[in-house]
Length: 309
Ligand SMILES: NC(=O)c1ccc[n+]([C@@H]2O[C@H](COP(=O)([O-])OP(=O)(O)OC[C@H]3O[C@@H](n4cnc5c(N)ncnc54)[C@H](OP(=O)(O)O)[C@@H]3O)[C@@H](O)[C@H]2O)c1
Image 1 (spheres, protein in one colour):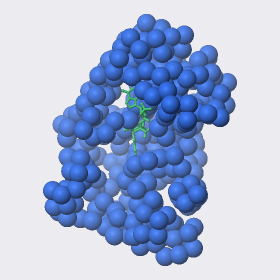
Image 2 (cartoon, protein in one colour):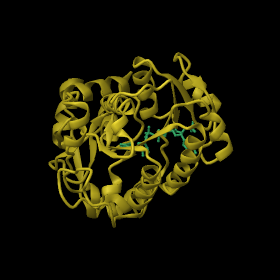
Image 3 (tube, protein in one colour):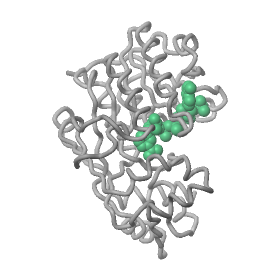
Image 4 (spheres, protein in one colour):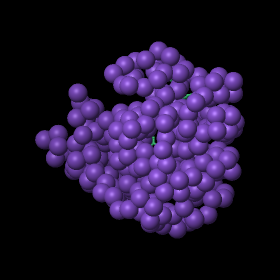
């Protein structure tokens, strides 16, 4: 059943998910209020967008309560660095309290990490959610706070696209755009699935408008299997030159993590990135119907154009 959303609050709106979700909601006739900690960041990001601006730190219950007043839906698009992953549960609690006061619905943009370690593929919403590294546990805790409050929780694959700053596909594409060899986690022949962030936010906007979406988890599929070698070939075809890809085996990444802080942060989740991953769209398709994802050659070309402009 379709629902009407007069005004939607997007918390953590300044990241790539929030920035792609805003126009999707506006296109569907919804007013949007964008929320993140910094007024300057919000004003810079949404200078040309018809959105209300309301700075608030989601860790500050009073501030976020005020910021989401008169909204029908609160969307959690907050992203945190690995060292602060535990804060997802804390912001989930403040957002739940704020949404309850505003009598608003809740939707959380999350990842697939709460299902780690992967025990069976393709990943479905009923895949076991226990054990795993500390990031998986932190994600699961935050999602459970949201689900207990009746939120829709959306599990995204690793994503990429024009506004994305970091992901396991975006970083190699940035290297390709800069004329460098693409550094790939694990074997460049292992198929993994990625979602183009505009596709993902179109799905999130449609889910937000469906009554049945709330109180449940939703796996969003990507554009199908992709290896590092295929990504390099697609990047090369678009850039008009050879793009090389260099796979880094787990033992090498573990050794390098002794000296690189980025890799040290990635270390707890590294083993989960060395195998294949794929997502099952059945639950989502049963609600929204079949959808066509942007094919990788086009999505990678659009990402590279943004990275080189
Ligand atoms: N990268 C991937 O491949 C991937 C894949 C699947 C899922 N995800 C998850 O998807 C979600 C959205 O990702 P994203 O890349 O769009 O997020 P992001 O860019 O990492 O973060 C979005 C915004 O959150 C704001 N923020 C941080 N702490 C806040 C707080 N306490 N209160 C209010 N705002 C706060 C920041 O804005 P200000 O600095 O202006 O406050 C930031 O610009 C994240 O949970 C991410 O982990 C990511």
